[in-house]
Length: 108
Image (cartoon, rainbow, N blue to C red; front, top):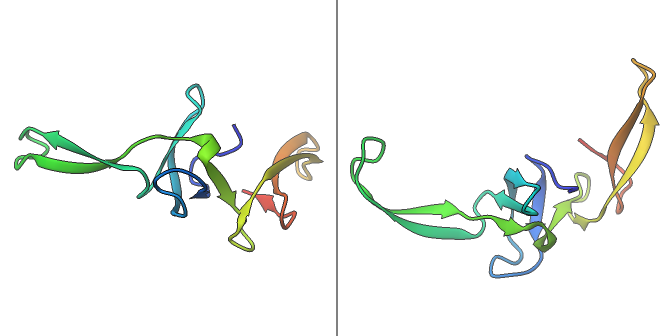
């Protein structure tokens, strides 16, 4: 999976199409991600110590990773992700980095 936690992404299909947000959690085995403020679902909860009032809580639900694209850090446009192997200056070991296909810039 090429999308990781704390990446900025945009939803390209579904009910939340066009919304952007930060990835909060990644489920690689299920091919799903949870994005901040996207795909909100309402859940009815009983009163408990954590939530003494109870009531209806809005919560983000997982969305399939095929429905999101990474935002380019330089231009803030949707981009595909490539990878490149570079040699680390400090350790001299090979390291794989993610690259934006639009601008060619490395993604942290």
